[in-house]
Image 1 (cartoon, one colour):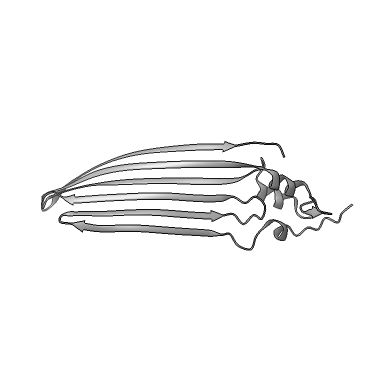
Image 2: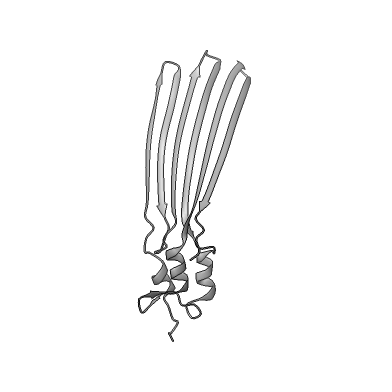
Length: 171
């Protein structure tokens, strides 16, 4: 028999969610050509104490533009992004599950050194991993034909790929 008045917030959540972000960019020009390149890394961890979700994002960008003549400009842009997300795969939305029942209806902590129900489920859950890649290639042309007439042409190709995996072990 237990008295089911658990402090859900104290049991389940950290006081902070660690994150970091790094950016590096280089830009410049040479004659009639300009360029810009950047690399970015971003990561964030969930506020969950047990088996928290983690997100990482990597991206790279490159832009080159050149003025072929006084009236004709061409350029290209390349963007690549990878998003990596992992979380506990307990087959339920843990946030909804915790707050739906409230602290009086579900043993949601550790009693006599034993993890009960949802805590055990979260700690022992398999990891669900989702990786999304996006590649975008762009080429453009701008022609100032007359003072009042400009011709713009733009072509973009984009491809996205998503992979999802989980061990789906029973808890």
